[in-house]
Image (cartoon, rainbow, N blue to C red; front, side):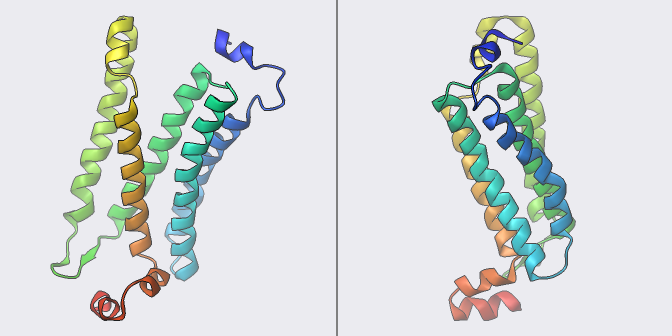
Length: 184
């Protein structure tokens, strides 16, 4: 265990952030299963699971910082959980192409951005791993910062919208004239 890890051993809250993060990892197969349930509750469950994952992404980091439970393993596991959830969601959305009201079926509408997002995640992970093996200054240059947190938040919101747009219960939120256009 690292120095940070041993600082929290013995606390009743030692592993709460870990449990939340591991819950996100465990939710990925459930997200996949509900995505392919072909009824209203399957789509609603998928969207709800993703929203819960997005909220717990923030929550586990907040708890770790607030209770000083941060650790090297936690810093490793949290982005892995995020990448698994985001990549799984992007791949799932690619399996059922969207229908744009104006353009009709547009199979590349999610696929091309998905390739870019997953490619960026793999590239940044590789760069961070390489920088960590070089020296401290390089690691600091590619460390996670507030811009990355905004990117993650924007990505989670966008994916939530894409998942929710597949949900027929979402139509209740649309104005009635848009509802008839969306069904065409």
